[in-house]
Length: 86
Image (cartoon, rainbow, N blue to C red; front, side):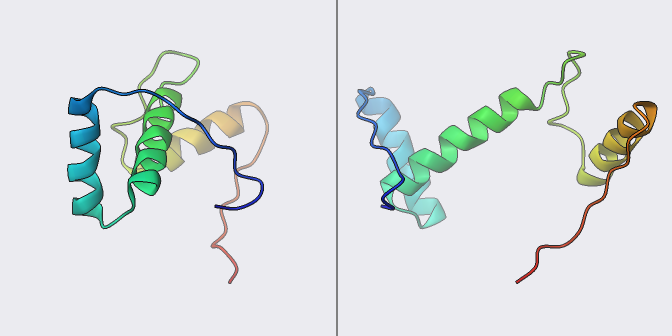
């Protein structure tokens, strides 16, 4: 755990914990890492519904990039995607 990380104590049902345990084994993660991953994925799924109510979660990457590019152009902006630098 990094110094900047915050601790969160929460209560969950034993059924939910069992599901996380299964998921962590399948994905070869610790229970903490798996729980964080699942929470982040849930938040991303929520964010996938844009301000127009359009569900973007089913879009393939290329479709999503085309849609984003179109929206940026309509706002007279450009979208530039570059690979990560190592």
